[in-house]
Amino acid sequence: MALSPDLIAILVCPQCKGKLDLEANEAAFVCPACRLRYPVREGIPVMLVDEAEPTS
Amino acid sequence: MTQHLADAHQSRIIDQFSRQAIPFTQIPGHYDAMQVLIEMSRVTKEDLVLDVACGPGMVACEFARHAHHVTGIDITPAMIEQAEKRQQEQNLENVSWQIGTATPLPFADGSFSLVLTRYSYHHLLAPTEALAEMIRVCRPGGRVLVADVAIESSKSATYDRLEILRDPSHTHALTREEFSALFLNSGLQECRQSGYGVDIELEAQLKASFPKPGDEEIIRKMVTEDVGVDSIGINARVGDHRIVYTVPIAVYVGTKS
Image (cartoon, each protein chain N blue to C red):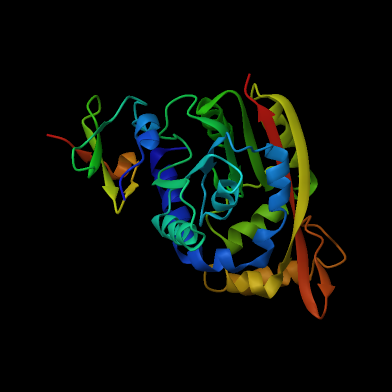
């Protein structure tokens, strides 16, 4: 299921509260400031700093 | 609180609620008094609602019938799975889910018009910070509502001891005084309070709980011996040859200025 535009607009990085970028395939939200990638698993964003992956 | 202790506590919450994901939804008492939350929150079809620590989505799905949209967030993936299942069974389209913490919340300031949480504060390590986060993501003029156990202060320590035995992710049930102070010091305006009791049958509750080995008998003894004494503050009594008790719930709501 596609993520709702309303949800995309309000989600922020839990670490810095900064704006997130959504990957084109909606597989993850990326925080450019923290260089962290928050995965979207089966349509559910996993907004946990502990489970975020560092971006290269 | 060190990071290590905070991480260990977070693990206890996920462990307990992964096990509780199904039994929790099956306790009839948890359907009681939803109407109190609906009325206290004054939810309308215009509202964008956030349910913090939404668990298996009972409150979120009920509020979805009265609101424009509801977002539910919980740290336990097994709970979000149950919530999605409930949403699908009820054919609700105006609900979305996230996995995340209560502190911090991964939402921009002022994202919602009604922010609520039920039965979560007794699992939190920092209720003041959690309330501040709920207020941050609420827009000015919106409402923030917390419903949770509120124990008489003289009985609080005994109640906490019982609950930590039954559910190791329990931290501290706020006393009525602590609950009032939390709201009065929060900056929220026009605070209102209500309450209700959740009747629980001891053996049914034990079946839905996952205490450490050996602790079940201690819990049974503590509650049974409290009949007619009420040192725990839950009015333990015998009804229909069973031990039943009533957990007092307080509901607080305030408006963000």
